[in-house]
Image (cartoon, rainbow over all chains, first blue to last red; front, side):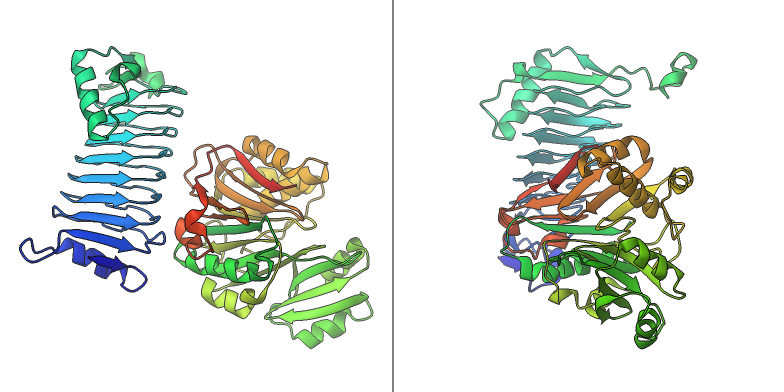
Length: 227
Length: 293
């Protein structure tokens, strides 16, 4: 089913996608002429496929549960923010705060993601085929961030328990983020994520793992200069 | 918040459509700035002639025209809403002195090719009042304002111009503008408002007048201007964008073989011809991107 944003209001398009009757409704949708609109496909709860033909604005697929969303273009700030489950595949580049605070699901970005990718992520798996900007995985709590290109300044600043895998160069690490040993468990997990993102040709051993040094978890007077 | 937009033509293909393209961009940025709007357009220039963009506020056009006749020799005087474009071959210093003493009017900008218009109100109404759709030109810059640092007035609206053919629009806020204003005033730059962006415009004018080019000027600005900002700035032949190093204020660039478009959000440029095939990217923090000279 085609939904044309030049003919339909955004609210109508989102309402249609948010109220799917599993027995009667189509499960495959295409959104035409997104023209940079914000909050496209926000708050979807059903297991449907949505393809967006073009570039979108902020918070695309925010709070997504179960839906499989593909954007054939670039996305603005906060794609997949607070996603709970499902999948979002961005075929272009992503702006700031991709996957922010997301609890679950899978976000794949074919191009680059700019600053604060995975900020405060809480369980989502993010695979970026290009590079990420500064302050990525800032205060990230759980889940995995995989970057096939480079990472900008202050990667993983004030990190909790997210695992970060970077193939390229890291400009600098943030407070309390350190490089960690890649053991078999991590190699297997990374292989699984790469396969899921259809990146079978990449080898997990070419990545480096970064995580929390766990020194900022509790207040210690010795660490005062780090706060 | 605020919305900023700009378009720089790399070929002559869209010169006649420049106003239409910029107008759509401003209207689409209403959601980021409903308080006032403004734009600067760089048009074809005439030899030895300077154009002065003047806001005459509530003054009747005839009264203004009569008031300057005899004082300034002008080649044309055109009214557009509450603005007047005055063309003259006289030396800018003389014209500026006369205009600055003229009560009830304010000079918005001047130069060989620039024309600037700004007004309080919704962007949709402002572009209609000035008939922006009918403008042609080589490059243009616009702004929709959500007022934070100073009052909703025409003087507090962007673009700001503090030098010949220069203009600046800004999304963000500066924190060291009072100190900078004091230093620049000592160097002879005049400020008309309490607005932080006008100080950044003055900073740029000051550096350009000491023979630095636009790119060098903006690069030194990264060290001297403290605060949050995405700036789009224009000169007679140049066009540039810079974001501060934290990069909280958004920007997106779309480049084709015919034009470069910049806006706070992609939706501002979704109507531009061929934009879906353009090279679209987010300018990196702390890096100056420039086109032309």
